[in-house]
Length: 255
Ligand code: ADE
Image 1 (cartoon, protein in one colour):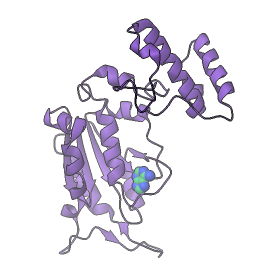
Image 2: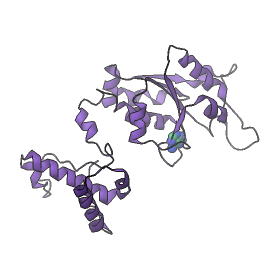
Image 3: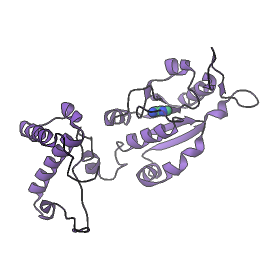
């Protein structure tokens, strides 16, 4: 799939996109990302991209022309199914479900806002959906665009080498991930659960499922409502919520 990012700060993107799992996915051609400077479609000699708000008030507002010209340029560039996503603190919050849905698109244009905002006609007439990464206001949509790029790319087949690792991640099935441990067995006197050293795959799987339920019950009981659990799993979950009431989760760190 392909992402086109519209931004006033194109230099913010390459360092993140070059590295790690995402960098490899891009080099392998599974995901392509093109970064475009909104100012290239700016207006007049100074390639102006913003102006004072009608009606007065603090700050500058991004003009519609440069952004809409970019969207049109990209959409006539042979792209049939392009979804235009505006990063904004006003949108619905990004979730794994949104990311999985977006991973099914051929092309996504990400519009990053700056300053006090974007002329609302862009949002109303040229954007398919708005996405927020949380209830706080960043100085621009660039970090949110990188967050979206990262989380959506993980659902593009092949980007994360081991499909199993995506499926066992926290929140994939609406629950948190079980705790993980590695060498050494004894770290400064702190051991690891014996069952993980037993080599008994059945017992390990059962322990992990229960740890997932206990951890979710303790840290994110709100996730229970939407999780798909068997009756016996729900009983474990309910017992954990009960036991944890007023105490701290005791399973250690991890995702
Ligand atoms: N731009 C500024 N804050 C944002 C947020 N929380 N999510 C998405 N875009 C933003």
